[in-house]
Amino acid sequence: MCVRFTVLTLFPELFPGPLGASLAGRALERGLWALHTVNMRDFGLGAHRAVDDAPFGGGAGMVLRPDVVAAALDSVPGPGRRICLSPRGAPLTQALVQDLAAEPAITLLCGRYEGVDQRALDARACEEISIGDYVLSGGEIAALALMDAVVRLIPGVMGNAQTPAEESFGPEGLLEYPHYTRPGVWEGRAVPGVLLSGNHAAIAAWRAEQALATTRARRPDLLPPQRRG
Ligand code: SAM
Image (cartoon, rainbow, N blue to C red; front, side, top):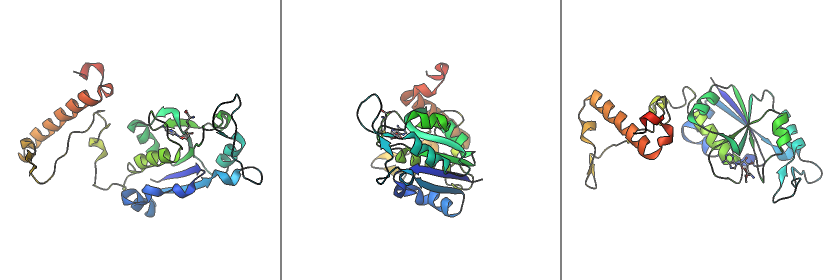
């Protein structure tokens, strides 16, 4: 299985960026996923290749023009699911990431300035996805975050390095239990004894209890009301 990403951006030099390193970078080289960029400037208008204009109704900033954005979107062969990164979008959750990892092709539209003319998003059926309740200056870092989360779920990318089923936001919807490694005592702090016991059932029970306690303390919103304690 391979996910083919096409990223529409005014800054193609930002890609693959951090995704060219480590597990994602090796997987890219091995063809487990693919990445293309489209420079929206190539579809700009006039001598200056303008891509934006002032907002109707007034207000600060500029807006990406619908004709420019649509021409860039239309240039992508087999675009698959079209996603505009936007603080107004649906939150990017692990469940959504899992859905996206099953797609053969995804086109990511990176906004800049005040954002993208709504008509282009409506006319080209772009869903909007947000990576969190804060405002970035452009969609590129959001696109990298989304791709990173998706790529690590593609079979063969992580190998045995990590096990997604046991991670935070997995099937149980909990945050993960804490991790420890050598040395057994560090700066006077000892590793919890149960982890050294060799008793796998006791370790699993301790981890389950820690995961629930951490989720209750930090993210009770992830739990159904009856499990919030
Ligand atoms: N005027 C917009 C608003 O208030 O909702 C913010 C525009 S932001 C300065 C420029 C671009 O950054 C957006 O079009 C979007 O592509 C990207 N962006 C900013 N915050 C984001 C977030 N939390 N998630 C995804 N994309 C984001």
